[in-house]
Length: 90
Image 1 (cartoon, rainbow, N blue to C red):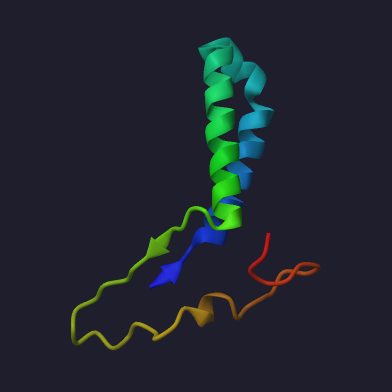
Image 2 (image 1 turned 90 degrees about the horizontal axis):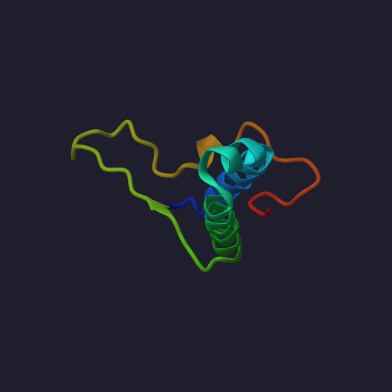
């Protein structure tokens, strides 16, 4: 079981930036109300995941005799650590 809360906050940060870059085109296609709705949804979700109000868990299931799955997910993060920020923070 792994909590992907901070990963999802980072994903939403990227989605919001891409959305904001496309706002003129999106407004032409769908209107101001649509833009406000999605801006609120993306920014609100980002804030909720970043502060811990929302959580996102991932469970990995495998057959009982499959011993190839690691006990932890540490191997995913062993390659590099972000520079300038504490690991696991936004």
